Image (cartoon, rainbow, N blue to C red; front, side, top):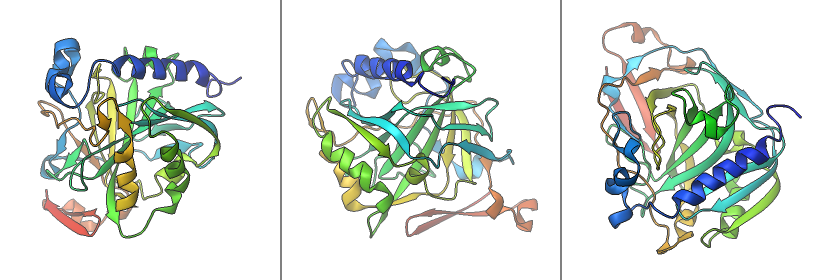
Length: 307
Protein backbone atom coordinates (compact mmCIF):
# COMPACT_ATOMS: atom_id res chain seq x y z
CA UNK A 1 0.00 0.00 0.00
CA UNK A 2 1.62 3.25 -1.12
CA UNK A 3 1.47 6.57 0.71
CA UNK A 4 -0.78 7.86 -2.08
CA UNK A 5 -3.13 4.89 -1.79
CA UNK A 6 -5.56 3.86 0.87
CA UNK A 7 -4.53 6.04 3.65
CA UNK A 8 -7.56 7.56 1.93
CA UNK A 9 -9.86 5.86 4.41
CA UNK A 10 -8.13 7.59 7.32
CA UNK A 11 -8.03 10.84 5.37
CA UNK A 12 -11.76 10.63 4.65
CA UNK A 13 -12.45 9.99 8.33
CA UNK A 14 -10.64 13.19 9.29
CA UNK A 15 -12.30 15.27 6.59
CA UNK A 16 -15.84 14.08 7.31
CA UNK A 17 -15.25 14.44 11.04
CA UNK A 18 -14.06 18.01 10.66
CA UNK A 19 -16.89 19.00 8.33
CA UNK A 20 -19.59 17.30 10.39
CA UNK A 21 -18.35 18.99 13.55
CA UNK A 22 -18.31 22.43 12.02
CA UNK A 23 -21.69 21.85 10.38
CA UNK A 24 -23.27 22.32 13.81
CA UNK A 25 -21.99 25.79 14.70
CA UNK A 26 -21.34 27.99 11.71
CA UNK A 27 -23.34 29.20 8.77
CA UNK A 28 -23.65 32.08 6.35
CA UNK A 29 -26.50 34.09 7.89
CA UNK A 30 -27.45 35.74 11.17
CA UNK A 31 -25.76 34.77 14.41
CA UNK A 32 -23.97 31.87 12.71
CA UNK A 33 -22.71 34.02 9.82
CA UNK A 34 -19.13 34.99 8.93
CA UNK A 35 -19.09 38.13 11.09
CA UNK A 36 -19.53 35.90 14.15
CA UNK A 37 -17.09 33.11 13.29
CA UNK A 38 -14.33 34.80 15.27
CA UNK A 39 -16.38 34.44 18.46
CA UNK A 40 -15.67 30.71 18.47
CA UNK A 41 -12.68 30.44 16.13
CA UNK A 42 -10.05 33.05 16.89
CA UNK A 43 -8.11 32.35 13.70
CA UNK A 44 -11.07 33.66 11.68
CA UNK A 45 -10.06 37.22 12.64
CA UNK A 46 -6.41 36.74 11.66
CA UNK A 47 -4.41 38.97 9.30
CA UNK A 48 -3.98 36.45 6.47
CA UNK A 49 -7.54 35.35 5.84
CA UNK A 50 -9.25 34.18 2.66
CA UNK A 51 -10.98 34.84 0.34
CA UNK A 52 -9.66 38.12 -1.07
CA UNK A 53 -10.38 40.58 -3.86
CA UNK A 54 -7.45 40.29 -6.29
CA UNK A 55 -6.61 43.78 -7.54
CA UNK A 56 -4.82 42.94 -10.77
CA UNK A 57 -2.98 46.25 -11.02
CA UNK A 58 -1.18 45.51 -7.74
CA UNK A 59 0.02 41.97 -8.42
CA UNK A 60 3.68 41.08 -8.86
CA UNK A 61 4.70 39.08 -11.91
CA UNK A 62 6.67 35.93 -11.23
CA UNK A 63 7.45 33.04 -13.55
CA UNK A 64 7.10 29.93 -11.42
CA UNK A 65 8.20 26.45 -12.50
CA UNK A 66 5.44 24.47 -14.24
CA UNK A 67 2.78 22.90 -12.07
CA UNK A 68 3.05 19.11 -12.19
CA UNK A 69 -0.25 17.22 -12.07
CA UNK A 70 -0.18 13.49 -11.30
CA UNK A 71 -3.26 11.25 -11.64
CA UNK A 72 -5.42 14.20 -12.69
CA UNK A 73 -6.24 12.44 -15.96
CA UNK A 74 -7.35 9.13 -14.39
CA UNK A 75 -10.95 8.28 -13.55
CA UNK A 76 -11.50 8.11 -9.79
CA UNK A 77 -11.99 4.52 -8.69
CA UNK A 78 -14.49 5.17 -5.91
CA UNK A 79 -15.73 8.46 -4.45
CA UNK A 80 -18.28 9.75 -1.97
CA UNK A 81 -20.35 12.82 -2.78
CA UNK A 82 -21.83 14.43 0.34
CA UNK A 83 -24.19 17.30 1.15
CA UNK A 84 -22.85 18.42 4.55
CA UNK A 85 -25.23 21.35 4.88
CA UNK A 86 -22.62 23.92 3.87
CA UNK A 87 -21.59 22.65 0.45
CA UNK A 88 -21.42 19.57 -1.72
CA UNK A 89 -18.14 17.74 -1.21
CA UNK A 90 -16.40 14.97 -3.14
CA UNK A 91 -13.85 12.75 -1.41
CA UNK A 92 -11.96 9.69 -2.64
CA UNK A 93 -12.68 6.40 -0.90
CA UNK A 94 -10.57 4.04 -2.96
CA UNK A 95 -7.75 4.25 -5.48
CA UNK A 96 -4.71 6.40 -6.06
CA UNK A 97 -5.11 10.05 -5.19
CA UNK A 98 -4.20 12.93 -7.52
CA UNK A 99 -1.18 15.01 -6.50
CA UNK A 100 0.30 18.35 -7.48
CA UNK A 101 3.77 19.87 -7.15
CA UNK A 102 5.82 22.63 -8.74
CA UNK A 103 4.67 26.19 -9.29
CA UNK A 104 4.76 28.09 -5.98
CA UNK A 105 4.71 24.82 -4.01
CA UNK A 106 7.80 23.48 -2.25
CA UNK A 107 6.41 19.99 -1.70
CA UNK A 108 4.01 17.46 -3.19
CA UNK A 109 0.38 17.87 -2.19
CA UNK A 110 -2.20 15.09 -2.22
CA UNK A 111 -5.94 15.36 -2.83
CA UNK A 112 -8.12 15.73 0.27
CA UNK A 113 -11.50 16.81 -1.11
CA UNK A 114 -13.19 19.20 -3.49
CA UNK A 115 -16.21 21.37 -2.89
CA UNK A 116 -18.06 24.36 -4.34
CA UNK A 117 -19.27 27.84 -3.39
CA UNK A 118 -22.20 29.59 -5.07
CA UNK A 119 -24.71 32.40 -4.65
CA UNK A 120 -28.45 33.08 -5.01
CA UNK A 121 -28.07 34.23 -8.62
CA UNK A 122 -25.52 34.26 -11.43
CA UNK A 123 -23.99 37.63 -10.50
CA UNK A 124 -22.33 36.46 -7.30
CA UNK A 125 -21.34 33.29 -5.50
CA UNK A 126 -17.57 33.02 -5.79
CA UNK A 127 -15.48 33.65 -2.70
CA UNK A 128 -12.40 35.13 -4.32
CA UNK A 129 -12.96 38.10 -6.63
CA UNK A 130 -10.87 39.60 -9.41
CA UNK A 131 -11.00 43.38 -9.83
CA UNK A 132 -14.12 43.51 -7.60
CA UNK A 133 -15.85 41.06 -9.97
CA UNK A 134 -17.74 38.09 -8.54
CA UNK A 135 -18.43 34.87 -10.40
CA UNK A 136 -21.47 32.58 -10.06
CA UNK A 137 -19.57 29.51 -8.89
CA UNK A 138 -16.17 28.58 -7.49
CA UNK A 139 -14.50 25.19 -7.13
CA UNK A 140 -11.95 24.50 -4.41
CA UNK A 141 -9.71 21.46 -4.73
CA UNK A 142 -8.17 21.07 -1.28
CA UNK A 143 -4.83 19.28 -1.12
CA UNK A 144 -2.55 18.55 1.84
CA UNK A 145 1.24 18.54 2.08
CA UNK A 146 2.30 14.90 1.89
CA UNK A 147 5.37 15.65 4.00
CA UNK A 148 2.90 15.35 6.86
CA UNK A 149 1.15 12.15 7.87
CA UNK A 150 -2.41 13.35 7.35
CA UNK A 151 -4.69 16.24 6.49
CA UNK A 152 -5.27 16.76 10.21
CA UNK A 153 -1.56 17.06 10.95
CA UNK A 154 -1.02 19.36 7.97
CA UNK A 155 -3.46 21.86 9.52
CA UNK A 156 -0.77 22.64 12.10
CA UNK A 157 1.84 23.85 9.61
CA UNK A 158 2.16 27.02 7.55
CA UNK A 159 2.72 25.04 4.35
CA UNK A 160 0.13 22.43 5.25
CA UNK A 161 -2.42 22.93 2.47
CA UNK A 162 -2.91 24.25 -1.01
CA UNK A 163 -6.26 25.10 -2.57
CA UNK A 164 -6.62 25.02 -6.33
CA UNK A 165 -9.38 27.51 -7.02
CA UNK A 166 -11.38 27.68 -10.26
CA UNK A 167 -13.95 30.30 -11.21
CA UNK A 168 -16.92 29.66 -13.50
CA UNK A 169 -18.58 31.66 -16.25
CA UNK A 170 -22.09 31.27 -17.66
CA UNK A 171 -22.31 29.49 -21.01
CA UNK A 172 -25.26 29.00 -23.34
CA UNK A 173 -24.57 25.26 -23.43
CA UNK A 174 -24.17 22.57 -20.79
CA UNK A 175 -20.64 21.52 -19.99
CA UNK A 176 -20.89 17.80 -20.76
CA UNK A 177 -17.83 17.02 -18.64
CA UNK A 178 -20.08 17.69 -15.64
CA UNK A 179 -22.82 15.22 -16.60
CA UNK A 180 -21.77 12.59 -14.08
CA UNK A 181 -21.35 15.14 -11.31
CA UNK A 182 -24.84 16.49 -12.03
CA UNK A 183 -26.20 12.99 -11.44
CA UNK A 184 -24.34 12.97 -8.13
CA UNK A 185 -25.86 16.34 -7.18
CA UNK A 186 -29.34 14.97 -7.85
CA UNK A 187 -28.63 12.10 -5.45
CA UNK A 188 -27.63 14.29 -2.48
CA UNK A 189 -30.28 17.04 -2.40
CA UNK A 190 -31.16 16.30 1.22
CA UNK A 191 -29.11 17.52 4.17
CA UNK A 192 -26.33 15.06 5.11
CA UNK A 193 -27.14 12.83 2.14
CA UNK A 194 -24.11 10.94 0.83
CA UNK A 195 -23.69 8.52 -2.04
CA UNK A 196 -20.81 6.45 -3.37
CA UNK A 197 -19.89 6.30 -7.05
CA UNK A 198 -17.42 4.11 -8.91
CA UNK A 199 -15.38 4.99 -12.00
CA UNK A 200 -16.02 8.70 -11.53
CA UNK A 201 -14.80 11.42 -13.87
CA UNK A 202 -11.20 12.54 -13.45
CA UNK A 203 -10.14 15.78 -11.80
CA UNK A 204 -8.87 16.79 -15.21
CA UNK A 205 -12.46 16.65 -16.49
CA UNK A 206 -13.55 19.02 -13.73
CA UNK A 207 -10.88 21.57 -14.72
CA UNK A 208 -10.46 21.12 -18.48
CA UNK A 209 -9.10 24.61 -19.21
CA UNK A 210 -5.71 26.23 -19.84
CA UNK A 211 -4.20 26.28 -16.36
CA UNK A 212 -0.90 28.00 -17.16
CA UNK A 213 -1.92 31.46 -15.88
CA UNK A 214 -2.82 31.92 -12.23
CA UNK A 215 -2.62 34.17 -9.18
CA UNK A 216 -1.13 32.85 -5.95
CA UNK A 217 -1.07 34.14 -2.39
CA UNK A 218 -0.82 32.92 1.20
CA UNK A 219 -4.13 32.66 3.00
CA UNK A 220 -6.50 30.53 5.01
CA UNK A 221 -9.37 28.12 4.90
CA UNK A 222 -12.55 30.04 4.07
CA UNK A 223 -14.57 28.20 6.72
CA UNK A 224 -13.86 27.61 10.43
CA UNK A 225 -11.33 26.98 11.82
CA UNK A 226 -9.94 29.47 9.21
CA UNK A 227 -6.42 28.06 9.63
CA UNK A 228 -3.81 30.27 7.93
CA UNK A 229 -1.98 27.37 6.34
CA UNK A 230 -3.06 27.62 2.69
CA UNK A 231 -1.15 28.46 -0.47
CA UNK A 232 -3.90 29.62 -2.81
CA UNK A 233 -3.62 29.05 -6.55
CA UNK A 234 -6.38 31.01 -8.29
CA UNK A 235 -6.57 30.19 -11.99
CA UNK A 236 -7.22 33.05 -14.39
CA UNK A 237 -9.29 31.24 -17.00
CA UNK A 238 -12.88 30.36 -16.18
CA UNK A 239 -14.74 27.07 -16.61
CA UNK A 240 -17.92 27.43 -18.69
CA UNK A 241 -21.17 25.93 -17.40
CA UNK A 242 -24.81 26.66 -18.18
CA UNK A 243 -27.29 28.55 -16.02
CA UNK A 244 -29.13 25.28 -15.42
CA UNK A 245 -25.98 23.56 -14.18
CA UNK A 246 -25.35 26.38 -11.71
CA UNK A 247 -28.99 26.35 -10.59
CA UNK A 248 -28.67 22.69 -9.60
CA UNK A 249 -26.37 23.65 -6.73
CA UNK A 250 -29.07 25.91 -5.27
CA UNK A 251 -31.46 22.95 -5.10
CA UNK A 252 -29.44 21.36 -2.29
CA UNK A 253 -30.91 21.57 1.21
CA UNK A 254 -29.39 22.69 4.47
CA UNK A 255 -31.11 22.84 7.86
CA UNK A 256 -32.99 26.02 6.90
CA UNK A 257 -34.22 25.08 3.43
CA UNK A 258 -32.50 25.46 0.08
CA UNK A 259 -28.76 26.14 0.28
CA UNK A 260 -28.85 29.23 -1.93
CA UNK A 261 -25.52 30.77 -0.92
CA UNK A 262 -22.38 29.64 0.87
CA UNK A 263 -19.64 32.17 0.26
CA UNK A 264 -17.56 34.08 2.79
CA UNK A 265 -17.07 37.82 2.10
CA UNK A 266 -13.62 38.93 0.97
CA UNK A 267 -11.06 39.66 3.69
CA UNK A 268 -8.43 42.39 3.97
CA UNK A 269 -5.14 41.72 2.19
CA UNK A 270 -2.99 43.44 4.86
CA UNK A 271 0.73 42.90 4.16
CA UNK A 272 0.40 40.02 1.72
CA UNK A 273 1.75 39.94 -1.82
CA UNK A 274 -0.25 38.45 -4.69
CA UNK A 275 1.88 36.93 -7.44
CA UNK A 276 0.77 36.38 -11.01
CA UNK A 277 2.20 33.57 -13.11
CA UNK A 278 1.61 34.70 -16.67
CA UNK A 279 1.62 31.32 -18.36
CA UNK A 280 3.32 30.41 -21.63
CA UNK A 281 0.61 31.97 -23.78
CA UNK A 282 1.14 35.37 -22.18
CA UNK A 283 4.91 35.62 -22.70
CA UNK A 284 5.20 38.40 -25.24
CA UNK A 285 7.66 41.19 -25.79
CA UNK A 286 5.27 43.73 -24.34
CA UNK A 287 5.74 42.12 -20.94
CA UNK A 288 9.22 43.60 -20.68
CA UNK A 289 7.89 47.15 -20.85
CA UNK A 290 6.71 49.18 -17.87
CA UNK A 291 3.11 48.94 -19.10
CA UNK A 292 1.71 45.46 -19.62
CA UNK A 293 -1.76 44.72 -20.89
CA UNK A 294 -3.58 41.63 -19.76
CA UNK A 295 -6.99 40.44 -20.78
CA UNK A 296 -8.95 38.35 -18.33
CA UNK A 297 -11.96 36.68 -19.94
CA UNK A 298 -15.13 36.51 -17.88
CA UNK A 299 -17.47 34.56 -20.14
CA UNK A 300 -18.33 37.00 -22.89
CA UNK A 301 -16.92 39.94 -20.93
CA UNK A 302 -13.33 41.08 -21.23
CA UNK A 303 -11.79 43.16 -18.48
CA UNK A 304 -8.44 44.66 -19.41
CA UNK A 305 -6.07 46.01 -16.83
CA UNK A 306 -2.69 47.70 -16.75
CA UNK A 307 0.33 47.20 -14.57
